[in-house]
Structures are given as C-alpha cells and as structure tokens.
Amino acid sequence: MLLGDIYIAQYKRFIIMLRSFGYSNRSIMSYVLGTVTGMSIIAWGIATGLTWGGIYLAISLIAKAGLAIPFGVL
Image (tube, rainbow, N blue to C red; front, side, top):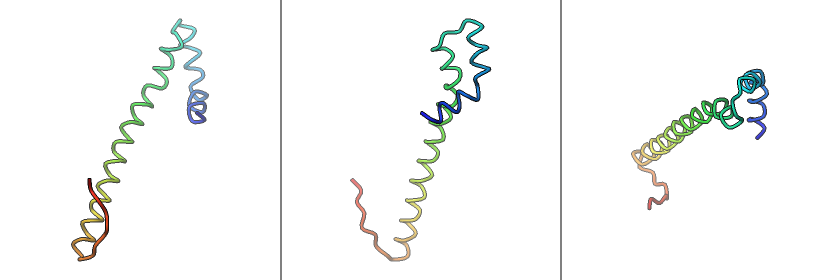
C-alpha cells in the first residue's frame, strides 16, 4: 500500500490532467498502475525462474560431487 501511495504521489500531475480531461477514476488507475502491475508480474516470473534454476544447479553440483542432500520431489 505504501509503495502504491508513493507511486501515485509521483504521478499526481498526470492524474490531475487525466481528471481534467474527464477520465473516470477506474480508467486513471488502469493507466497509472497498469504498466507497473505488468512489469511486476514479469519480474516475478523471471526471479522465480532464476531462483528455481539456481536451486537445481546447486543440487546438481552437490550430487555430482558425491554428496547427498535429503530432499523430496512429489
């Protein structure tokens, strides 16, 4: 919530301009937060993939070294 407030505070002039043109609150929020939400989802996907890849790589290297890690895969 705090990050959303900070983001909206930065784009306050843009929001005021859109209101003066007659845009509804719903369309203003979709313009202001739509790009950030999309980029956040993309960043989450990339970070999740990199994390799982790193875990897989670490487990593979440890297994190749002849060590055992007790973990389960369903």
